[in-house]
Image (spheres, protein in one colour):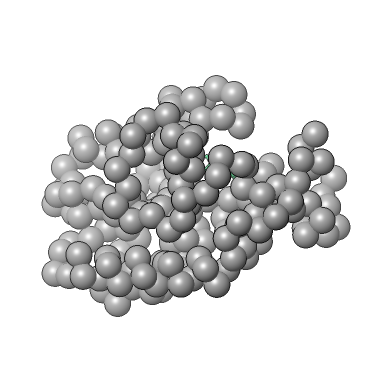
Length: 183
Ligand code: XMP
Ligand code: MG
C-alpha cells in the first residue's frame, strides 16, 4: 500500500533541497574549471542519479553531453553484492572522453567499483566521480570520488532520486525512512 502522506513515512530530513542545490552549484563551479576545454561526458547511473544529473548539469556553464547506464547487482535485494549486470549500456563510445560519473549515493561502493573498472577498459581519457551523497562508514571498497556533496550516516535514505520499493524518488529533500515503513 502506498502511503497517503509521504512526510509521515520519514524519520528525519538529513539534507534539504536548499543544501543540495547550494552544494551542487559549488561542485559545478569546480567542474567548470577542471574540465574547461576538455571533451567531457557526464554518465548517469539510472535511476537514482536522475535528480542529481538534472540539477548538477543545469549549474554547469560548460557544455556537457549526458549519457546513461542502467545496472543491477545480483544477490540480496537491499544490499549491493558487487556482481553487476548491465541492463542498459551507454550510447556513446568512451574513447578519448573525460568521463564524469554522476551518482546519487556511494553506500558500499561495490557497484561503482565495478563500473569504474569496467569503464577503464573502454578507452576513456580520464574517469572521475561526482556523488551527491556518500556513507563513509558503509563503504566496503575504497572509491576515490573527486566531487562529493555530503557525507551522511549509514541509515537507509530516500528522496532526491533515491527510492524504497520505487517510492519516494520525487521527495525534494534527502530523508531517513521511518522504521515502521519496512518493518
Ligand atoms: P552501493 O554503493 O552499495 O550502492 O553499491 C548501489 C546503489 O544502491 C542504491 N542505494 C540506496 N538507495 N537509499 C536508497 O534509496 C540508500 O540508502 C541507498 N544506498 C544505496 C543506490 O542507487 C546506489 O547507487
Ligand atoms: Mg545509484
